Length: 398
Ligand SMILES: Cc1cc2nc3c(=O)[nH]c(=O)nc-3n(C[C@H](O)[C@H](O)[C@H](O)COP(=O)(O)OP(=O)(O)OC[C@H]3O[C@@H](n4cnc5c(N)ncnc54)[C@H](O)[C@@H]3O)c2cc1C
Image 1: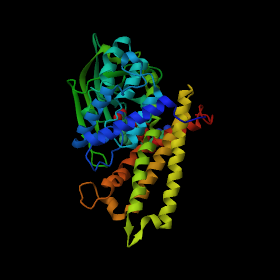
Image 2: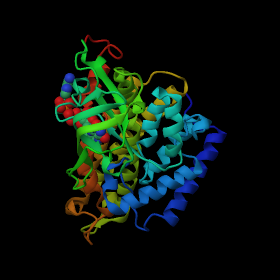
Image 3: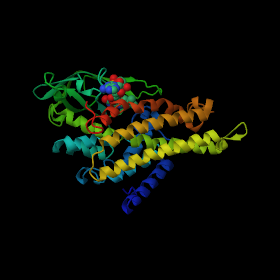
Image 4: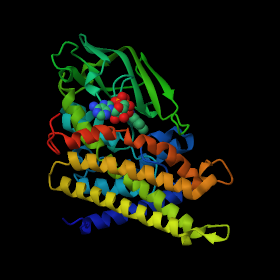
């Protein structure tokens, strides 16, 4: 295995690093400490504005959907796509969006008309997408979902509810999973997937405030919502295939979590180098040095796990099990790091970015609260462990 970048990839990484410097110069506030990737922090008005500008700039550079075919605005390069994401995530740049992932689903399952209609606006940075899977009693066991989509003459009629749809208040489309055959012998055979405009008549969004204080997600109510038939993604009643593909994408989330954690960690190390408590430099405290060194090992291990997944993907190998391992590991490392940061910062760790006494932009307080979600979002750690134990991993019977 050789994880080194080739010449072209190295040149692209340099280009991305210049782009990030440009963003720091033109768009980001001077004291910007970075935000977590994903739509949750875009609930802050200032971050939403920055994210929109970044998204447009990425589109203008042709850097959204880099792995897609050229005819849909891509460059057919998965490695470039990952290099870009890694740099944006490490620098905490807002605007990294799940739209491109939903575009992957459209690329895989969409008709030619759907690809022509939905992909170019994503790659130009004009639209954003949300995900509509979870329901009040449906999370891990998503095949028991109940949102009803009845087939009518020229549309499907939606009735029911979704929950935890991240950032849907600010998106143009949502990829929604619904029950189209309530009588299917096996539950997973009665599900279909649709691309829905959340502003359609009959859709009501009710924001939910997360532990971080942000309106990160929404409950979504569908009351007699008409969805055109041409918005069905994939075959009717074969939504399981789309969902399995979507899960396989989300499991690479471990790499996202780890590269985000690297930024927090590096900031914490700098803080320890610069800070003294009671006249004693933190950097000379044996316990702190020890714990930072331990953390550095764990982050490096996670990073290597991620590089291996990328390498395997490049070789056309299946990455379901390493993806699950990395997701569990990444969440654990991030949660441990947030604890360490809070302990080192002491009482300052509890202050948010509105306090004049805050340290490191109040980011560890945010991370301490938000990292709870990382072992849940995109499939819980328990479900990932079930996959590792099952037929594709250890081979234990289900
Ligand atoms: C930050 C964040 C963003 C999210 N964004 C979205 C989004 O945009 N769109 C969307 O649709 N959803 C979203 N979700 C919801 C997410 O997909 C669900 O939280 C997840 O699928 C788990 O479902 P649940 O919360 O209903 O937990 P449940 O499935 O009810 O599980 C509860 C607990 O029981 C455990 N458990 C359940 N079944 C088993 C089992 N078979 N074996 C062992 N343990 C089990 C789980 O691991 C968990 O600890 C988001 C969640 C978070 C935290």
